[in-house]
Every structure is written in structure tokens, then in C-alpha cells.
Image (cartoon, rainbow, N blue to C red; front, side):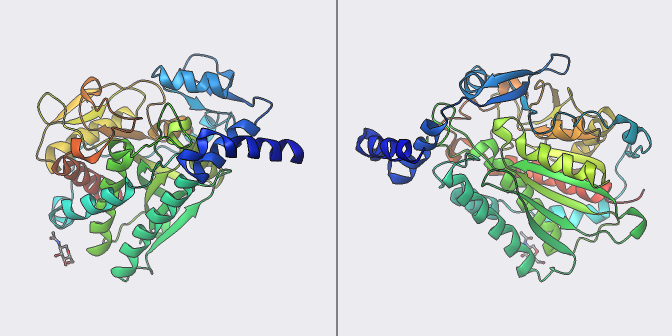
Length: 382
Ligand SMILES: *[C@@H]1O[C@H](CO)[C@@H](O)[C@H](O)[C@H]1NC(C)=O
């Protein structure tokens, strides 16, 4: 093994790969070292039986635009229905806390989103298994922690790494709830932090400005406003930045499985994946209506009507479209807002051209308003 490693090392060192830099060459080396092709269990439809697939076949599936969940590590995530039936969260049908939401929305600004996204897209890629992806999550958690520190709110808000079997961790920022009866319940606002270049995952340039840098800074700005302006929920509210979404919802499945195991009860989860691109039609908020919770999605429409300055449009995005699917599979209500109707969304994603110049920060701000309403409204007992 060691001999083979050295041989490969010298082979790679003398190859043209070195032009991409020593770190890139080392990442590429890891690909060569996988002599036995590992197979992963891939599910790409709710009623389609999962298949064991080699990485090369999974890559091709991804390039063909097929959405999937890599369920290798969590094959039983969908089998907790008995537990779920014993507890049914109540989803409101209309908004009730406009006065409480207003100051948080009033404090949202595009400035911080812009400066954060500029820095976040400077990482060569945020691919979950790459050395760059390990650095980008470290940078992100520092920004989140700084929000809490600057507002001096460490007593009520915690920021934690959620570790996985790869180097890029997910991030969980949590507001404790004031009502002790509701301490096992929670509301989640999520986005994914990883990016991918679909041709060269390990080192191909992948700014991921829209997918999902936009959602990442959208919920960070929502979080900043809530923290800075003294948000005190009744039940806990968490902000999640997932790793490994592009590889089959890996990070969010790890978190959802852990929460199920810990007996946590997720009242509602909202995913923000791609919030920056204004489609060719009118500027809208896309509300995904397939593979989501119907009641929560209806409530989401009411949140857009009340808190956003643009209308919503209903759209579909298919199986395992983003991290809300992990929570749905675990039996919890989840919903998903996206930048436009799915057909009208950004076509530059997963390439080196997913850049900031194609995005609107004012558009992202509309999603931050909706996420603020979501966090505040659902944090109340009713
Ligand atoms: C947001 O609130 C903070 C703290 O109250 C304040 O310093 C800041 O000026 C506000 N920003 C905006 C855009 O309203």
C-alpha cells in the first residue's frame, strides 16, 4: 500500500496535474487511491427501489440532472412513522405576529449579504470532501459566531459544528426557547453550504454563488437580524448550514437521523436553496409544492403574502431536490422556497459560471423576510 502510494505520488507529481497546484494534485491523488470502487446506495424516486452504484455512475447520474439521495448511511430514516404518529405538530393557517416580525424585517440589509457572499465564493470550491470545503466551513462558522459575539448574546444563542465522516462539518446555530414545556421541539431554517463543479468535483472551480451561497447568506442575514435585535422564541429555533447536499443530501440526513434518535420534535423546517437569480418572467418567490408538507406549504404562501414585497408562484422540483427532503423522510413537516419557478431558475449552477454578477441581492432579501416570518411565527406555541 505504501509503495503503491509513493509510486502514485511521483506519478502525479510529474504529471500536468501539478499545474493546478499541490493541494489539487493531492486531492486528485485520493481519487486514484480508491482501487476498489466503493458502492453507495442511491435512491432517486420515492417509489423506486434504491440501487447500489459506483461513484462514476453516481457522477453521471448527477451530470444528467437526476436528483437523488445517497441513503447508504441512513437506510432506515424513513421508517420511524410509528413514533411520528404519536406526535403531530400544529401548523398555523395564518400569520399572527406581524408586530413582532416587523422590526426584524426592518433591520435586514443587502450589505452584509453582499460582503459575505463575495468572500464565500472566493474559495476555489466548497466541495464537501475537498480541502477547500473544509476551509470554507471554518470561515462560515466564524462569521456566524461573530454575529453572536458582537451582539453579546452567547447566553441564549449557541453556534456548533455538526461533524460528519468527512472534513466539512454542518453548522447548527440555536436560539434556546423560553417555554420549558417546548424544549424538545424546534423550528429549523436551513440552507446548504457546499458547492460542486459537476465535471471536476474535487478541485474544479465552483463559486456556487447561487447554489447555495445565496441561501447561505440569506439565512445568515435573517439570523443576524434576529440575534442583533433580541429575538426570544418560546420554542427553540435553529439555523442549519448543511454539508454534502450536492452528494445526495448527506449532511442533512446525518442531522435528521441524529435528531430523531435524540427524540427531538421538529415542528417545521424551511429550506432556502438558490434565492438570488431573478428568472426571465416576473420577479417571484418559488414555493415548491411536491415532496413537501402540504399544510406548512400553505402557511408559507401566507408568509409570502404578508411579509414579502413580491408574489409567490407554485412550482415543482422533483424527488430529493434539496435538504428539506431529509426532514420529510424523517417524518417532519418541511417546505422549500426557491428563486423562481423551477424551469426558470439559474442554469449556471454546478459550473464555474455560478457567479455573483448574475444575482440580485434585493431578491435574496425577499427570502430573508419570509425566513424571518417563518422563524418568529412558528416559534410561538400558538
Ligand atoms: C439594525 O439594528 C442594529 C442594532 O439595533 C443597528 O445598529 C443597525 O443600524 C440596524 N440596521 C438597519 C439596516 O436597520
